[in-house]
Image (tube, rainbow, N blue to C red; front, side, top):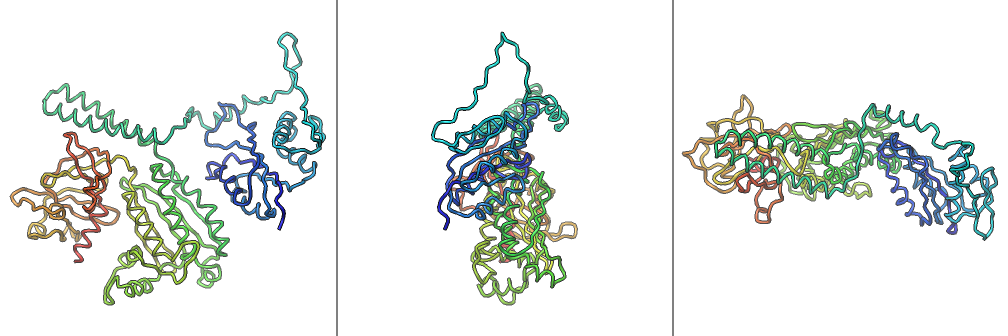
Length: 572
C-alpha cells in the first residue's frame, strides 16, 4: 500500500463542459472518495470581457493539492468521466521542477504575465520547488518567496506601453456578438424559491382576475367587461411568461446519463451507445430534478436486463454493440419521455408464469400484450432470479418504484416490448405542476376541472349509458369504436338527477379514450393547482384542487386514475 502523499492536479475545463452536463464540482466530490483535497485555487484569467462572455460556456481552470494513498491509476479512473470535457494533468508526489515547468508551458504558453500568476498561485498552495525562467524564480527554502515588485505606472512620467494582455479584446467582443448572432440577452441568477413565490402570486392574480370578470359580467357594464377582458389577457400572457421561466431543456437531465452508460457498460462487459434526441424539449425545472431517479432506474434496467452481451447479440445476427435511446417530445399539452433499447425484449411467457405463480392472474386468463406488461408494475413482481447491484431484483420491482414516482407528478407510464427487438418505456407528464388550462364541469353541487389538453369532444349522453340503470361504468359506440364511459356522480357516491339533461366529455390520454358523464359543462378555466387537504385523500382519481372566481373549491381530476378505475370496474 502506498503511503499517503500529496498529488498536484491541474484541471482546465473545455468551454462546452457545462453544455455537455459536466459539473466541475462533481470532480471534487469524486476525488473525496479517494482522499482529501488540501488546497484549491481558481484561475479565472481565461474569462473574456463581458461583451464577449458566453453565459453557457465554461472558462474554469483549477489547480489543487490532493492527499491520497491510492495509486495513480485509481485517481485517473475516478476522473475518467471528465476527460471528454477537460484537460486533466496529474503530477506525482515529489514531481521534479521540470514537470511543473512543463505544466506551466501547457497552461500559459508564452504569456509571461500569466506564468507569474500561476507561480504565485502555486506558492500560496504551499509548493516549494526550484524553477528558473525569465519571469520569476522560486527558491526551495523555508524563507518566504518574494515576488518581483511590479512598478506602478506613474501618471506624470510617461512610459513605453508594454504588451497589453487585453490585446485583441475588441476582436473577442466582436466574435462574442457574432456567436450570438446579434442576441443581446443577459442572464441573471434567481433563487428557485423566489421564482416559486412569483408563480404563486400570479396564480392568485388569475383567481382575483376571474372574480373581477365575473362581477363585471353580472353588472352588465360594457366598459367594465372590456377593461377586465384586457386585464385577463395580460394576466394570461404574464402567467405564460412566468411559467416559461421555470422551463429548462430536458437535455440537461439526459446529459448526466452519458457517464452512467459508459461506466455501467464497461462494468457489464457490454458495448452500449447512448443516443439522445429531443434534448431541446422543455419541461418544468422541478420536474426535471424529480425525473432523475426514475430515469436512472429505467436506464439501468435496459443496460442490465434488456441489452444482451456482445456474443449473444452476434449470435442473434445483431451488431455487437447495443443502442440505448433517450427521446423527448411534446404531445397534446404533455411532455413524453421515452427510454428504448434494441435488446432481447421481455419474455411474455415468463412474465405470465410469474404472475400466475404469485396469484396475480388465473391460469386461464387471456391477456393482451399491454395487459401483460402492466403486470410488471404490480408490487412484489419481479422477473429476476438474482439480485444485482445495478437494478435490484429485476425489471419488476424497479418499475413499481418508477410508477409511484411518475404518478406523484400526475403522470403515467407505459411499457411496450417486442421479442428480439427491444423494449420501450414511455413516460407522459404534464408540462407544469403549478397551473393548467382546464375545462370546468359540475356534478351535483361539486365542481370538477379536467386538463383542457385532454378534452377531445363533448356530446349528449349516448343511449347505451342512459339505459344503464344504477351502473357506474359501461361502454358505448363512438363512430364505430367501443369506448368506456364513467358516471362521475355514481363514481363519487351520489345519485344523478334523472330529470336533468346530462352530458358526456370524451377524454383522450395517449392512445386511450374514455367518456365522462357530468351534469353541466361550464367552459374553459385557468386552474391554479393546490394540494389536496387530508380529508380528500381517500377519494380516487383526484390530482388537486383549485379556487374558482366565486371563492368555491373545485377538484382537479386525475385522468389516469379515472381510466384505471374504469378498467377495474369493467373487469369486475
